[in-house]
Image (cartoon, rainbow, N blue to C red; front, side, top):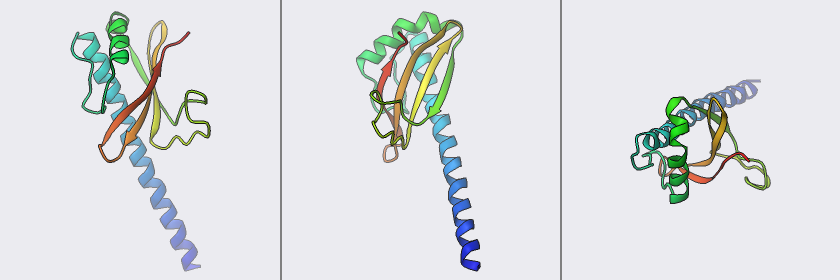
Length: 131
């Protein structure tokens, strides 16, 4: 009986720690998204200290959307990976998330991110815009 209670306590502790960790990743991901949007709005280099590398394609996309983002925008965080074929076939979305950037007109851009525990930063795995 004591072993059973100990196992339950350990499981609860792991759950609580993982929830706190995921909350931290969510806040960091949204902060990284805000960094990119604000840099584009203010005509600065589109970068974030929370992202390992921002390629020219995504920099250009943010610059092209800067006027639409100046008035108002929202960043929506979704834990996990994008559906296949954009994401992994078996959706092993560990440390992955999707940031969707919207304004009043609707979705403007989505970013597929993966958190790197060693660097404490995100990698941009891809991005897309609505059709």
